[in-house]
Image (cartoon, rainbow, N blue to C red; front, side):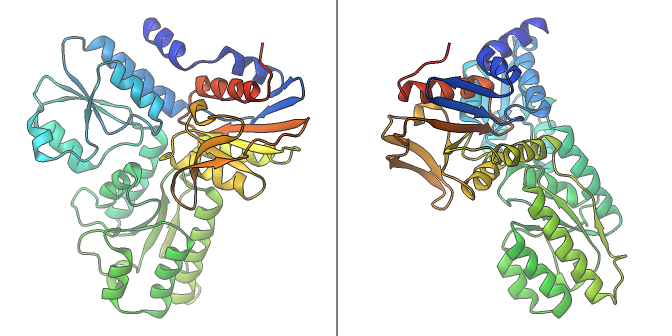
Length: 383
């Protein structure tokens, strides 16, 4: 596998970024200072997923290889998968997609996993599966399966359309399919759950409010008696903890002070938390602006941008190509939820300090490209 490792490092490693890290995460060039967060970029789970995908390409040279959806939420990395000759298979493949599979095909499951029904459908075609699911995600699955076995409804803090959350929800049904779940995006939706538990309400209105974010046959009058909080591993820890506290209090209020019908396990990904903590630490420094680099559909990267935007001008970009000029930038707008173009983004002051961070799905090579482009726009260059 040495050849695989060399190929991965060639595509994603950055000697410049590693050098800056050994210098305390600070690069001073002329009148420009770049400060890197202490923790950013690829985590172990992402590195493992990419290594396995590259290895599959080396091992199964005479077989077709498919990838369910995206290996991770980073367009540059996924483009590299295409360059390796790995075919795309929709994360939720149609019958036509599945009929195209043959018994000697290889199907890669991405780092955030896949729904049980999708895995079963692929297995039914006799395909060999290369499972790159992150261990932290599987830890959540273990908890929600336990909930289902004990007839505890899983309240999943996550994005209902996210692949990881959908995969987790499918495990929350349990082996017999009789388990239940509700997916809550934020505190507002969690409050709706808490209010129903304490005050009751119209089940039809509750189900309408949550749309498809509940298990089949879910009845809020029956299935909110015993609950357990789980989460998409890349959500904000502070929000998950607030949701946990809110629902625990709701159970206690309803049950005369007892919390016997409530359970919670800390399933926030360690790498996600490390990157959030490192950003909070970076924001204590004197910065003029912050660059957040990564895929726009990356949950953990989006949360970093949210954290930064609460304190200083923050630009969420996909890669260095978004830095069109010193006057124009393409970036993701958190409120509009789309990429937009802004002008006059780069201050013209003599001395400028820029912070840079990235989510767990962003390679160091993109960080290097970004900081070099920033220096170029400032009329300076890294060694």
